[in-house]
Length: 121
Image (cartoon, one colour):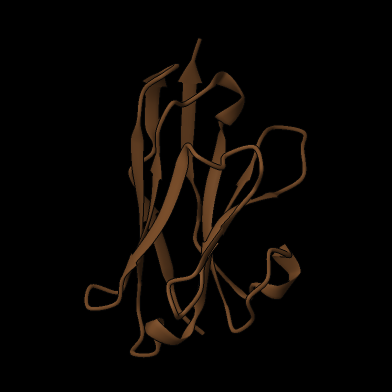
């Protein structure tokens, strides 16, 4: 398994931007699909976006056009660039690693501890 540590969360006004980072340990980082998920209080953990080992990407409809997932295999890091943030984007954001190309949380076996993103309206 790979160990994951997220950073970059914080408080931002609506319309602003944040970039989350997720640093991974392990030499096999480049072989994983890396996903971003989020969980608001009282809600389920939802898929946000992913990048596969070929750098193909997929996004939830709610963030398409506003969020971008990228990866730097040399740095073992995956990023989530979030633009045009809305109050409804407020959640704890998690990165996760999977051997599958999947948006299902159950297919991701390694998870970070999460980072809080709060968007004020």
